Length: 448
Image 1 (cartoon, one colour):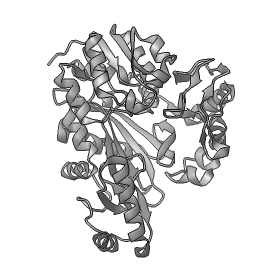
Image 2 (cartoon, one colour):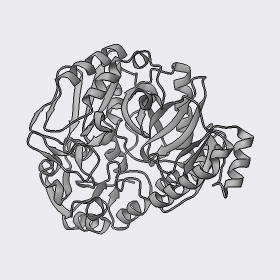
Image 3 (cartoon, one colour):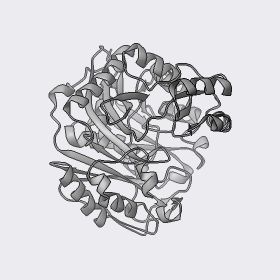
Image 4 (tube, one colour):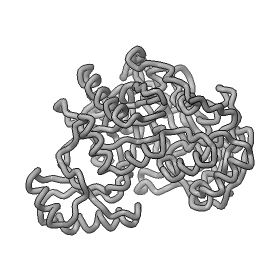
């Protein structure tokens, strides 16, 4: 079914809004930027064909304000809405509202957002599709006593996880039975506060895992494909800090296997548009399904750099009803790419946020260097949103060249007036464990 799109409302801010506007322009599609009162001077507002203020500085007043976003789309003649990532991107109610107003939602079907957003249901579907799971519960645990019984069966340590959310909230590691009660109650309370749902499920805690994710796509005609994997093991408080593609941790046999698992899940539900299937890898050849993100990922540029495929353009084309324009099996992996998330924060002061005016800015350049950012010299970074101000991406013929290019580019990056985590990235790139690929999801917490 074809959906003509001539004007997209970008329901987001920052670098991803800029990225969507750029991709749309290359396709000859107009864009509408929405912005909060705090974002009037943001670059995405200046780049879009049209811009409309939708509320006050807090996300609840603006970027999460569904009535105002829909009103802006209708008043300014949008055909479609692209949610980017974060905010409303994985909100099935928002996707349904968009479609109910005759607009195209540039993303998956609302029911797929809902299915994959419920981790318990997502695990059921993965199991049905033959995708391996971490040993644990298929349904939420009803009580502390039940949690103790199951943990005794599968063995400690175990992990308690919120059934209805992510980002590390409602998550606790339990190393022994005597810790269970306090950590169960803490995780449940945190999940209830964050997601309005205190249900938890329990699974075996994999020691020193790696985080491997597969970029997938599906179209309206039942076709599914991939653009290989990314490694995102370097995380702080479950938030990714540095990502790369392809993973330095797996060989060709493992790569084919994890891609097969990801595509089984896509085909099982008839998934449409871009998504990411995330796995834990135990280093012994075993992959375990974690979750599926039903949106574009922050780290999508490293995939673009090694495949030459524009992920955002592909999202738009698939939303227009086109067939998948490529077969991932026929696209060779070209070199290696690394992304460093540049955040306005001070690693030496407990990663305290560092909003403020960018007094001097010089973005690195040269062969194999890309900067995705909404920040410019004189721009004032507001205190209301995520602290990421740029993504620095490098490409090399191999991993060593990508790393040396990243070192060079970080050394050229000037952002005066605020504190950033650039020094942290430089320290990461010097660590022997990173250079040898011997790092895990808990490594960065230990390093800093």
